[in-house]
Image 1 (tube, helix red, strand yellow):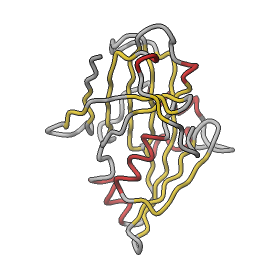
Image 2: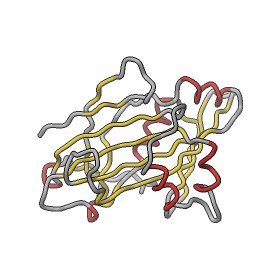
Image 3: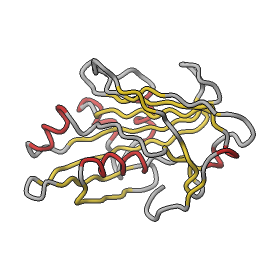
Length: 197
């Protein structure tokens, strides 16, 4: 089973190559542990200056690896982060279509891992008997997108999907990773952890 990916901020000079793997966590397809180091540079500086920042994340499944392949299923979420300067720990709230979850007192690495782990796709939305490809797209939220994405009672999923359908703005940090082909029958299965969806 071949799996290769490029995971990097869009503006990086020397990208880091990572293998994107996936696993079944109960009834959800999840990205295998992947270190993206997105809490760095300007986003980290802003957090340590007391600002709250957000990242937009999407995991999508396609049946081909073509750049313009049709997405057969996806999971999207907004991750709002803050930083406690006294404890030197992060808090993050995941806002998705059906839930809102918050964790706190996390290190930078644990915050990054938590965000990636909380982008799961129900396995019933994935082709059961054919190979598929997975892509992770993570972006620092552009303030110009906030009005359309954040609404009452929480998040506008349609607007968030529209954000991912276009290229990021030039100064918007972005991390991409993709891999495949995978099949559901070949995926490593783990017991689900509580509090993820």
